[in-house]
Length: 397
Image 1 (cartoon, rainbow, N blue to C red):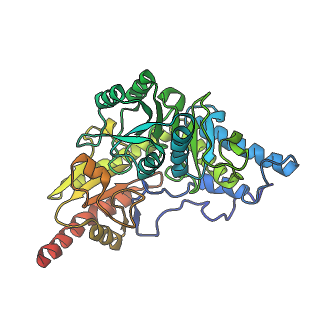
Image 2 (cartoon, one colour):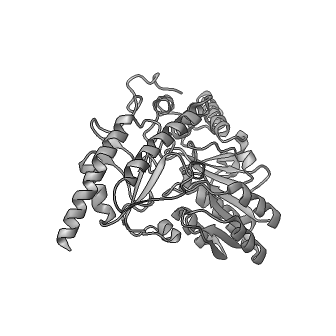
């Protein structure tokens, strides 16, 4: 039950920022890839994949093809992929599925985890044991080992890479520690998926959450990857969809769009090529920011210890919100702090956990459709925006 071939589909051409502007907020959400837009349009009026009539069987085939494509990107079997409405639901499903179901108990988690991880753990865990990080935002496996030695931990929460400063965590080492102590490991890979190679079957994690919209797929699509032979209690009940692991009519267009984006990234050299380009862009941004007085670059210095596509800066002498507004007026879309905290612009708990100023951060992030002109614009206008705001700030003091 398909539509047209995608000609004239809104979003079927590259969804860039308006002419003359630079979109540098891909870590919040990345524009939809044209291949994903075209694929979604084919199934925008799809039938229920759970029905046995021809239209239903066609929808089922499209859904399972999308599942295969997502599984291929993340190095696992299609049966391990549970489609969700996004990473937030996947994260909640992981926490609930373990803590309210198969293994109630304590959770150990890094102080720099996303709010979805922190709050879902606090809701369903018997207790939460925080794990400290260094000034670069990185967990110390020896501290994780010490916590696991002292406490009967049911679940460890560890992200692949940090959503604010880009710090890559030692997931493989932590997975080995979890296995040794009988704890389950959930990995939030939303920030790293599509930017780093992630092979679920080799990662050592029991559960991994991913999102489509941060890698050029549609909003409203994500997945929880579940280790083979691990049966968790479903977070959403009321139907037998997703092999009885997540109830509700599947969002077929979103799943197909996710699959199309995953397929594009799975082509030989594409993910690595995009990551190399992203690192070149962010290296330029880091160099430009480093030349501005009283600007600190947060996160690890070593490239292999940070996500390739984002830079987090501490801008001394001015609050975060005016910097964002000044950049926006100069044609650059950026962000401060977590992708889920823009309404409040409160101090970043991630930066506070790192021991740095949590009130003056600026996050610049690139993606699949970033161009040299985007970087040129930001490099050109950022020093002037900061200088003007500092002058205004000092005049009001």
